[in-house]
Length: 119
Length: 119
Image (cartoon, rainbow over all chains, first blue to last red; front, side, top):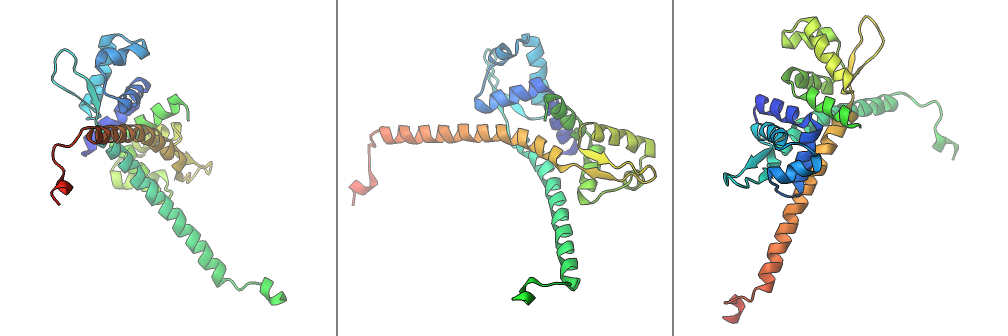
């Protein structure tokens, strides 16, 4: 996925109606009319959101002019998760390294009192 | 995380410079000057991006006026991943159900030829 596609995907997800459409399409494909119903939105308003979602590859639409069901493209969601997860992992590794460093320091410091010395 | 915070987090991640700052801060905390260096950006330009990242809770800054190192807040990344992953899971479960349904159909259909009949 290119930088521009990632920009567009995160921008598409930055709107609550578009996220609700993604959540709805995760359950099943749906037509514009079906998508408009629960949101109390006009068809043109939904169409506008769908164009944004289609533009970044989060959804696709078939060419059947009358129905044109919308389909979620899960691999675009995956690309967004992958980006975040990669850097989340770097962050965790950094904490792990810090933990290890602290343990090394503890090992290197002679203990003033050892519990097993009392036994 | 509220809907507005999720809106702001995805909007913050929709910019390549801000994503690069997140990636840099995943490795270690950094000051504005340190962050500005690799991007060939002015300090005010970086500060503007940092304000967006701070606004949605992706980064925090200490009150040490002179240095103010920026710190990545990993739990905000987690909230964004959680939202996407939840709906990604719904999508996978839907495919699983479809698979199961197809297997049920195959079992219900009497086979016209069974390989083990030949044995």
